[in-house]
Image (tube, rainbow, N blue to C red; front, side, top):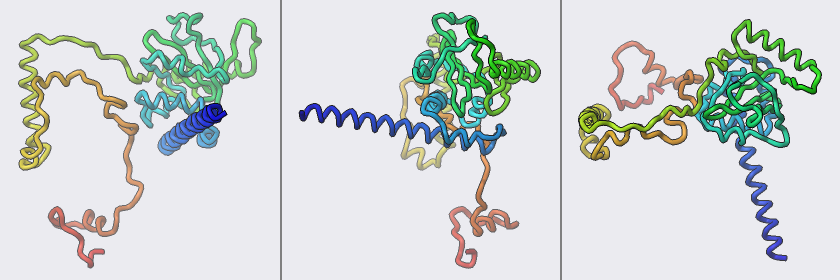
Length: 296
């Protein structure tokens, strides 16, 4: 009896933890959508749709963010941009039995569609999510209008609208997404986490010359990035061969961050003392000077 109650408690705790993580993911993706909506042009209704974001939609967008998607790039994703991720596991990860369905599409015809059929999913934000396999990973594209073309299905009104979207694509050379148009097409896709590295060996003479150049660069950095006394007190780690660090990849976002290529703007005015110091013509006070009581 006691062991049975313990198992039930563990299951309840695991279910609660899954629900908590799911809610955190949904909240995070909603915030990303709210951020991109402040500086992008979209069709009406995006924020209202984000309020009803499904767990599956949130999981897909969170996976893109985990593979390096930045907030400015989210605009093209929501507007139908064609995305390539060099991770074939996402093809299976984005299969949700309760909401996914097979789709027919003309994307990436070099892939065996009987083995890796294209997968669709409908939602308030993604409208119609379409994804499939590539030779090295997974592709994804959001569509404004779902299509149900098939050998045994009669055309529907959505199919007619989908054909109209295709005409728009042919005229504008832009994908028609749920919230706008995107020039990021299959011919000019958005690459996330591209697998472009290739190991190679250097000749001994080249390796020695490279090590000398790297040590000279490090020495210059030591004297220019900090004051002389700090550089002496806190020297950087010395490597036997500095070239060993070349080719090492950084974890997570490789240093770009969510807002790596975002526009930055000031939304609040500076404090009155700071404003007077910054904008009053004349000689500036020396560094470290604090405002007097009369300046406040």
